Image (cartoon, rainbow, N blue to C red; front, side, top):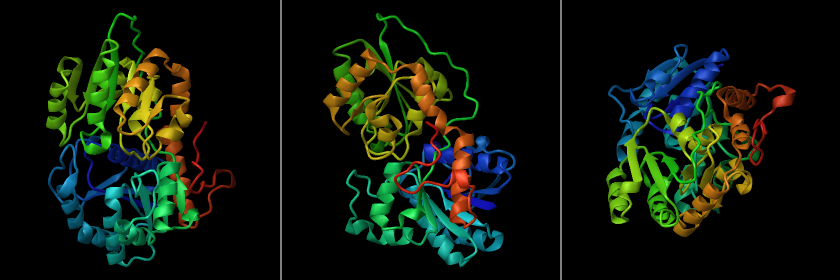
Length: 391
């Protein structure tokens, strides 16, 4: 099958990395794969395999962290080039690979008028971005556009349910799929053992934007170090960098927090940490949480809309705390450090999210939506049943 995966760019971010890993995996399984981006460049370009066609629709060099109005403008500018690509190349399937790429993919597909090219949307986050997920007036036009698609691939059960609620789509067209988060061969990284006299090493990682809740994390960490010696490494970059620096200063915790920027060794840092903290206000399927668990690192997460609850088995594999609850996050970090979950249990749970497993998940779902029946023992699960998660 000729598959086109469309997104903004190959900038830093989970959706971008998942898109590259999926493109590589599908190409390795014999599919013709075009990785189509609105703009050229980005720090993850080198990860694209040689048998994947990388097709930027505009020149330039994408920013390391892309968001906001500039990204929206570049996506709108990609409408005509993307529709021309669809008319001339005629892939069997166009997949909008993240929420930010969905509307441009829908509009370009309509402009191209290629009925023989299927349209699939990957829901990387909630449409409602709240636990209740009720349809709001603001979402009505967008919901109508989503319904034009042949199907939706959701990164978690919770996201799938939200898509179904907000759009009113038939549940048979909304499929939960496993995300390609981990390489099939993980880097060798030994867990670092510390005695009780050393400060506990906490790690958080992601784009410095409101979604990630790092402001709440810093406030909770300030409470934690009043109870026990600890150090927090906050890795990443983004538009809120200066504000987070300033907040650490206001809280008087600058000496206990490191800001290394974008890091090249996330797995090594996770293996060396005593606790990985996800403080997000919403997520689709938090890849960094999976990566930390794959390194045997204990984790804690907000019980935010998205995949954290199902990933952590309703809190059995790590504390789940309310979003933006500073006191609960501080208490949860303290408890997770005092009673860490066993390395082997965490590694086993994370093992479902390898590229090989996820590629099979996506391949079967795309074949199903294209009307080509998958094999009888691997039919995709509809909304509410996470497909191919190997437990």
